[in-house]
Length: 338
Image (cartoon, rainbow, N blue to C red; front, side, top):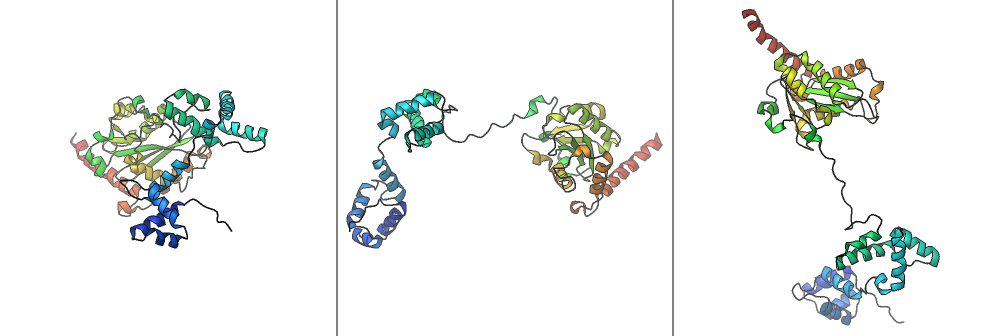
């Protein structure tokens, strides 16, 4: 019975390369692979490189290059004219192929063949008008990452970068330095304004009907105005437009404000961690509009009275109270002397 010839596969070419490097002859390689010696000899002569020698990947490319006869649309002018006419009418390559299959009762060509033909013409002729045959008219194939939303940094007046923040803030050496952010939920609308003191990890939170800048900075002013000046020295934000009125804190409370670098929320990791802990009690699917401020205060109170390892298992409320007591004791002698 006559044996049918099959082209060598990439795995077989890898075997040829391995046995050839081991010093075996063409006949020995052919015997090991159950192939004729002439097949191995022809493969080694036709598909080896003058400089690289015999490499399986290179041999595979050379073999495919010899079998390539050009695009079917290049070899069949009538088919090419029919395809280009439908593409010019606004049909996509997939629609063209499907319609031809419906009309002729068999597969004529694939959408991939059309795409390769169009982009091949663009490369060979440097004529970008060929892209007008395609629905999206892209110059190159492939997935393109969506353009990142432009950071609103340029919309924040009197913005100070986090690089200008004193080193003691990063080291949590003293109290009075805060971080603030918004806690968002799946339901559009209400958000939580969350602030955390960096040294004690004390948390403040309040509900807001939206992300408008003016109400948010007013609430922060109310929160910080009740504290002594040494406990409201600075606050760090991200670059959200909701904090664009930050300068009101600077003007009215002499509280310095700093902003993280673009796309770097980790630079205010304390508040990010706090929001993650609040998610245990207020998951993202929670509807904040149904929560009362009393319920929110209950969640925050539970947070502030939970022992923390980073505080030596003291609670944030205990640490902040010690800071508050310390500053009161320092201010008492000055009041008496006055």
